[in-house]
Length: 216
Image 1 (tube, rainbow, N blue to C red):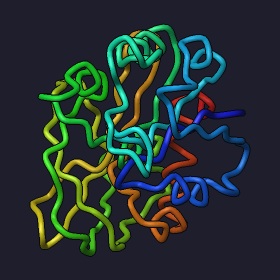
Image 2 (tube, rainbow, N blue to C red):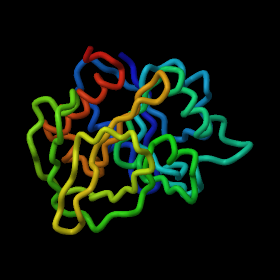
Image 3 (spheres, rainbow, N blue to C red):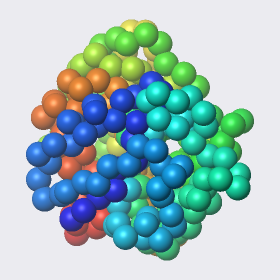
Image 4 (spheres, rainbow, N blue to C red):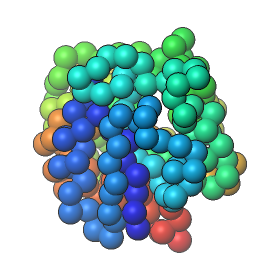
């Protein structure tokens, strides 16, 4: 399976994601950073899954916004249509730092609005309930950014929560069914060490399988 990875913004280098995905079983990746100038709706449809690890800045060297009316070919509405028609999005860490007041269409699709995070700190990842994505996952603790999100949807199936002494308990992972497609959110993933952790790699592998129905 070949997956499109959209990553790299002013605060989140694409290299962290590229290295973190290396060696995941059964998948290959195409990487895009300057999404404004290369993505088209037709290109999205070439992939069964888009891994979104990018916030609303153009690149790691450019804080200009990603989405610009009349310039950016793929808008949030195109991502929404892609999922409605049967595509899937796995939004990891930076993919969940859109704010409702700035990019309402993107936060509506993702089902959350980014509120902020404290300084990096030890965070414990706690699987919740019985979900295919958390099969075999045990609690683990690593240094990361503890994202604080406001859920905007009432259909989120939460499978992971996060805990730290610096922040109240937060939603760390959830899934949504949107039209014919699927969406999965994971909030950890700022540092390379967490991408290398066996439990996080298993979460990613099982999230990819759930998003693409490969677990059925």
